[in-house]
Length: 246
Ligand code: PLP
Image (cartoon, rainbow, N blue to C red; front, top):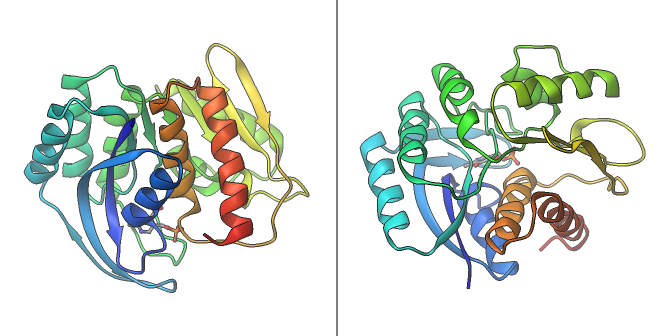
């Protein structure tokens, strides 16, 4: 069975974070190895406390997971601190040619910060150039670029190109926070330009959907799907995640 190394935080409510990643990967027939970056106490309404795992321990977990020889792709979620973002960037520089999906987890939907301000700078300057795919939602894309939140497709297209220019090999801007009858994600790559991934909009939100999407894409990459097919399959999975509530 193929395996994904998830580098992420825990969410005590079980809605998002590592438990969501493990559930997603398991449903897609993929094993999970993990490196925990932070332990959070939270509910659907608030982040009560964040305890960041020391960077040395994050490094040690990643090294141990990679040494197993089982990791076929990586998914990065919550990093909590600049020190952890830097530790992950260093580990990626040292190791690998494996595909990496980076979900830029900045703020919980309840409003609590999940990455400190210095960490956002490290993510931009040191991590982006080491990942295959960055998966921001519309507000995250704006935050990473220090821009206003996009209100038109033209603005989104400019922001996608600007994020590519920061170094990720591909960028998937998720359309969940954007209006319209369809929920359209935009996939930007240097080689194939921009592609639209459309799905009917489901009038429902669920915590952890960003975590689940990035993990589902990583599962596809671990199973040797190409990036576009991995994104299409993951989007279909998320449709079911919203519909079935499982
Ligand atoms: N908590 C943790 C530990 C996460 O990794 C994430 C991931 O995005 C969140 C909270 C945010 O989840 P949501 O924005 O769906 O509330």
